[in-house]
Length: 450
Image (cartoon, rainbow, N blue to C red):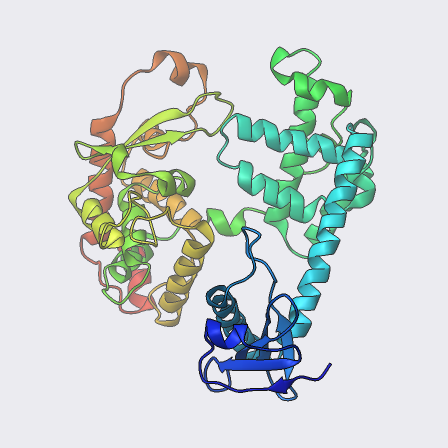
């Protein structure tokens, strides 16, 4: 259908209401950014976002979220959003209308897949997929901080193995587990393979436990009699890069770099080190409400414990200064943050910042190899042990290895004084001479002296 066009610089309600069928009026949204177009029709005008040469049109919805006819103001808002998307896609060499149509088809496919999955689960609720879903639910109900990551890993690396996913859980074999793991190990994704193996093994362990435990009854319907993942060999090499600790001279170089005003990750890295390399998931949840009397209270749900363990960490003045610098204007309650306290720091974004910092240090000759947060945690423990800090204190400082009977029931000492002394020793190790590392040769000499 062709329409006659009556151009105007800015559309008004009066202009739009006056349009007759087959008439159109438009409002430019900026040079080369498309236009909002109104077309007359019986029962009220219809709106479009118009762009490109030859011109293409994206129809705007006839009604808003409340079921009322779309107003000119609402149409203008939607057209501007499409204009921004159009400019972004054009820079990538992609077309807006084609992209929107592809996204619509993808969304419909996703909805159909969800319906199929729901129907399959209802028809066969004792599948391997149902077992893994029950495992994630069990983690969530138990307050396990790793439940979200487990769900992502299972969804990304197990669920697409349809043959195994839809198989009755009690019939899964060693070969089935290997069919899931081998694509990951072949691609060099050893850490992911280790996680996948661990999640499958734990889910089946709960299924076996259901036979005798009243606390695992949700798994009894799967009738598990063996653990196919337990028969697989451990994934070798999965943790090598994470467990490598830095030398003392490299740690001092990291500290020096983290104190540079032009280092984006500096305040966060200083905070992480001065708090003793705590588990990042615990730190990112900490808020100002968890701080009192220069002490930070964390809650550690790791291990087999049903209730999180209270874990108190001393806050040195230098750590408080780093926290304050990281929070900036202090708009929100979170301590370890990339958004001035409005939310806890995202693990992925922090990992990228730390990786970029490590890369700059390697390029500058300040360290010999890159590092991660996991490496910094290992470094803290390694260097404090080398400096004479007792293993019991290190275990308390980093809250690991405390699940035995002695720690759960008998040892009530809070170790606060020992933790404080360890953190002060760590601070002194990082700041005392030779803290300046100007070359790799000097770094190696410093290690030999230390």
